[in-house]
Figure 1: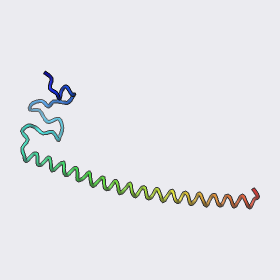
Figure 2 (figure 1 turned 90 degrees about the horizontal axis):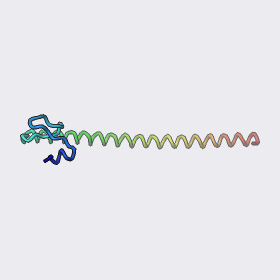
Figure 3 (figure 1 turned 45 degrees about the vertical axis):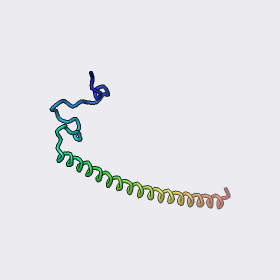
Figure 4 (figure 1 turned 30 degrees about the vertical axis):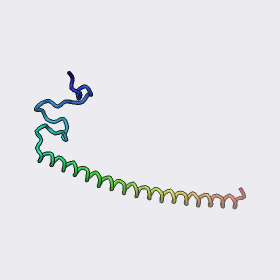
Length: 93
């Protein structure tokens, strides 16, 4: 019979071989090793949360800068339009 993992296309670790992922655990993993791996995962999650907050702040600042630039463009377009309308009136166009 074929193991369910093999039938699903998953890798089956070879007895005595290294785990297939750095986060895989062998059957003889001690409580101390489990705790260390758990703490490593918590550290990674905490770092990712900090990075996400930084990225959200950057996105917020970029959106504000974009809104300010769009407003400046609208103002300059308005001034250019007003100036060109005034030029046309003076020249009788």
